[in-house]
Length: 417
Image (cartoon, rainbow, N blue to C red; front, top):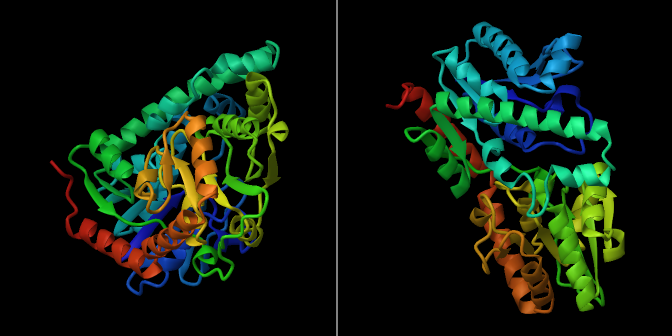
């Protein structure tokens, strides 16, 4: 069985460099290489690399998209340029390698549109959805004017915001077309299942769990109940409003005003522009409310920080199955999260974690206070969630699910009515 992957990120194996942000596709790739009857070709976008490499039996094909100055300017406002170039390059790769199956990562990228250009079956591995994410683009009381007010009517900021909005509209249309033309989907949450059947009612849907970085599955450094005088909260990722950074700040302020003794650490990239807009709008700063930013951490350091935390807190307004929650569960860290997207498939409230409504920092603050004072509840959540997560992300389980999915699609290669 020859399987061709299309993905956005460069595979870790291709350049063999230490990658802090190694993706879950890299972990899934390691699982697929253990399946004897699969020959894997991985095609990916690259700005600089062009050499096709064969490493441990996997063929890596970089895709260089040549943009003229005009293309670069126009592509900031529309996805049409990217779409045309991607389809042309993808077609050439398909014609050369002649795969039995095409596996596309993400419906929010242009690769899925190759389904209109080939009779080879295509399956999209659902990651997120910019169409549904757009419904949570800004938190309540936030919009583009928060940017404008923060940066004092800077004309370049205003123009930049308008260009981004125009580009987003184009991307939603592109994604909508992907949902319409691809008949096969694989996902792992109730949210995945719901979206696929709303956007393509007659599609085929396959349940395939998400692979994680192996360090989290085999770590000897695990969470233990060790609450000292100060509660230690931990969060990963505040890159966009979708991730709820203002919800985090509001919750931290409530905790501080309550007199709760805590420190809150955040890892990952946090754009300075976004930080300024939130602090200007909320009339307070993250540092004034015991929130510290650690930047992007190597996996070993991240495991150490998570294991030494009291609670992992997820504040997103929309999300599917965030790796951060899954990885925290594998280490046994108790989790409190907003109940959005596919997160309820990861956390059964009170059993594998605690769920609170989005945009309710008061209830989130109360949940943090209550859970952190209950040793028994935290210990039970830790044990149950870890067992559940390790079973969910077991590599043999994922290998069987993926193999079954691939074979069923190939054996039933016809477009659903």
